[in-house]
Structure formats: structure tokens, C-alpha cells
Amino acid sequence: MSRILASVCALALFTVSAVHAEESDTCLKSGDSIGAFYVVKVAGAEDDQVEKGEKLCYRCRYGQRPMVMVFARETEGNVGKLVQEIDAAVAANEEAQLKGLVTMLGKDESKLKSSANKFASKTGAKNIPFVVATDHEAGPSSYKIAEDAAVTVVVAANSEVVASHSFKTADQVDVAAIMGEVKKALN
Image 1: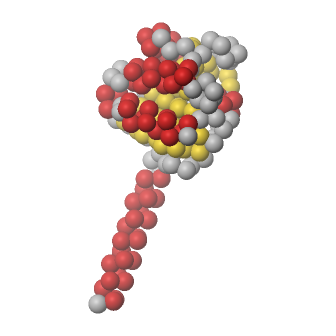
Image 2: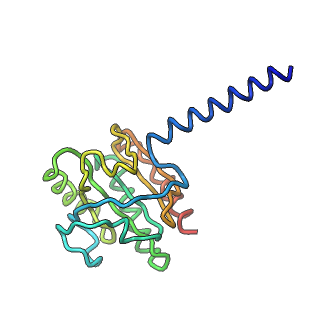
Image 3: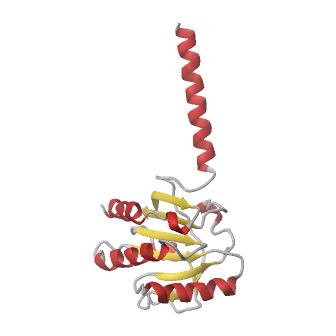
């Protein structure tokens, strides 16, 4: 009986380890460190002292502050509402220094810049920059953004992931869940 129990426990441990390893290859997880990545500012955040067209690392600029990073291949569905909620949260949490960032991903850099400008205008966001990643096709490699994700959102604080989500379509973006995690990052 004890051998059977030991075998079942070993199998369960192996299965959990295998699942965890598989998941860790697809996106950042809670507790993971967030790395630097370079972008070009296209629109938004008029008062952040960064000129449009300037190349920089916003993640580095934000340091250990709480932040919400949206990586978008699509801007339809719930993405606009999410960006508006993040923009409002950044304004409401100035004392906590909450930051946000929308990074456009895709193949054609000039189309991405045009999309970023249109999306910034459409959302009316004033407190967060809209940027195009230097590695605009896949996004920053250390973030392990799923190739088939329309939108990936990373909520971080103290340079660590609080939560991350990948959505296959823009309609699946769960604004309430993400904003709940933003509140956790502020505490």
C-alpha cells in the first residue's frame, strides 16, 4: 500500500513539475522579474518629458513603481476600455506613482505607429504612452509573449510580476480582473 501511495505521489509531483515547466515557457508568471526593453514613443503621456519618436526603455524609467504594461496586436474589443481604465487609474493614483504603457506589436513598424496614434486618439488616454517595441514582431523576448495572443497584460510592482494574462482575442480581455490586480499591485 505504501509503495502504491509513494508511486502516486511521485507521479503527481512529476505531473505538476511538467505542467509548471510548460506554463513558464509561455508567459511571465507572478513573482518573475520584469526586464528592460526598448520602444519608440508614438503618442500619449504628453507630460512625461519624452518626445515623440524618442527611443527609450519605459520599464527602466518607471523603475520599481507599480505598472501595467499592455502588449497589443489588436486594439478592438475590450482593449480600448482597458486602456481607459488604466489611464484613469494612473491619474487617480499619482501619489502611489502608478504607471501604464501600451506597446503595439506586429510586423509592419510604420503601420504599428499609425495604429498607435489612432488608438491613442480613440481612447483619449492622457497619462500613458503608446509605443512601438524595438522588437515589434514578437515583443521583448524575456516577457515570453505568446505569438498567438492578441493582447498580453503584465501588472508589476517592485520589478516583479503581480499578474499576467494573455488573450487570444481582444474581446476576451477581462478588464475587471486586470483592474483588480492593479489594486493589488498598489498595496
